Image (cartoon, rainbow, N blue to C red; front, side):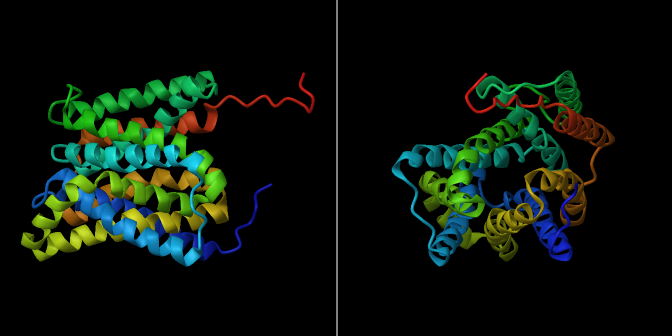
Length: 302
């Protein structure tokens, strides 16, 4: 039985806010990096997001993290924010915004592979087929980007960012169960900003000399994709549930392609569109038919 949504219009509104804000990050990062280096951009962007997160946590009187959870929070912030953005921003120096969004969309498959390798989950034959299909799509996209899949190319850096996102998704699950989705996100943003602090002085020295549009771009990146988007998405997941809300994420690459065309007049190559369609088909196949059901033991064991 399908649960009826209590606030369908609000769900549509906040889902749109999340997708539009996240999609805008891809082209705006490319615009802003004309005037600031990739890692300092990440440092100043997440310094803004961290300040908003502190305000959120204080307003909500959120509980402080337990000492036992600090290592996991540091890992999530270091990998899911700092490493992800360093790899992603550097990769976008040569990879188009649309292609980057399509490559990042392979992250759920990487998360599934991590679950199989580390957490004992199993994939069905459909899951393995979906993985192979998506990998073929990645190769197709990479063939149209500078450097292809050679080590250190923009494509491999963006795929490294996708892997960082997959690791973060896997590690944060236990934290979300303890602190809730938005509080966990706020703590992770703060940790990510702290890890990026060594690059913040360079960013603060650069920003005053940037054009007004560059400064506004940094502010937009820190407020909308990094904070408001997550807050909106957390509300949507609370209304729809994780499984149903995850289906909306298939809209993110098309939204990014449209925003990239509007903001930076980027027209994707046919090869990029073809490869992106193959990646998304593989992810959809793996997510719908690819997970083996978990065998639950009755109370008392066998």
